[in-house]
Length: 176
Ligand SMILES: *[C@@H]1O[C@H](CO)[C@@H](O)[C@H](O)[C@H]1NC(C)=O
Ligand SMILES: *[C@@H]1O[C@H](CO)[C@@H](O)[C@H](O)[C@H]1NC(C)=O
Ligand SMILES: *[C@@H]1O[C@H](CO)[C@@H](O)[C@H](O)[C@H]1NC(C)=O
Ligand SMILES: *[C@@H]1O[C@H](CO)[C@@H](O)[C@H](O)[C@H]1NC(C)=O
Ligand SMILES: *[C@@H]1O[C@H](CO)[C@@H](O)[C@H](O)[C@H]1NC(C)=O
Ligand SMILES: [Cu+2]
Image (tube, rainbow, N blue to C red; front, side, top):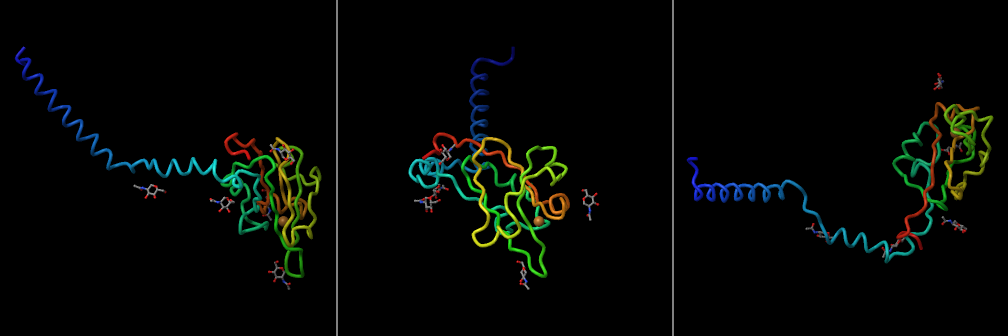
């Protein structure tokens, strides 16, 4: 009742002015979106053809394939893996002071969980991880369960030398 039309206009102007300043202030609170950066990243997918082909992935990175490193964490951090990517397992052949390692593959998730090495297939013996390492191509669109087969599951179970990988199809814009 008391508020006249002219007052209402003034209130609206003041309110929208303060809202404007709040939204301007918000801009400073968040990092500005960098269109140049975004566009150059997007563009690179089309320019650099070599980047889109299947890649070689060193299992464990600089840690290679050894007892006590958490390969499950490694696999999660390095996902996704794509079809035709190559996993490289590097481990030295055993000597007088070091223990052997190997690469086994489980057929089922159940035997992977239990580290039931008797139900796994050997892919690489303890001497096959030297030099360039043992290479395994992810050719099938299915889960792959890897583990070290040494000491009847001890390296798999207690040494956390186990991980699972589900290779994905490369998105169309990343294909050669
Ligand atoms: C945006 O990204 C480009 C390319 O990475 C960079 O050269 C430029 O300095 C960035 N601009 C700002 C405002 O951060
Ligand atoms: C393209 O990708 C390859 C392999 O990842 C890399 O060695 C090369 O430096 C890249 N080239 C450009 C122009 O980014
Ligand atoms: C993987 O490689 C094989 C042989 O080079 C090829 O026939 C197949 O199409 C490739 N698969 C994918 C998903 O790129
Ligand atoms: C045995 O192998 C380990 C690991 O590869 C290496 O660090 C060590 O030097 C080797 N020891 C001998 C006596 O060759
Ligand atoms: C190995 O792991 C199993 C199950 O996780 C556990 O019961 C056992 O005590 C461990 N053995 C050693 C020597 O750590
Ligand atoms: Cu091992």
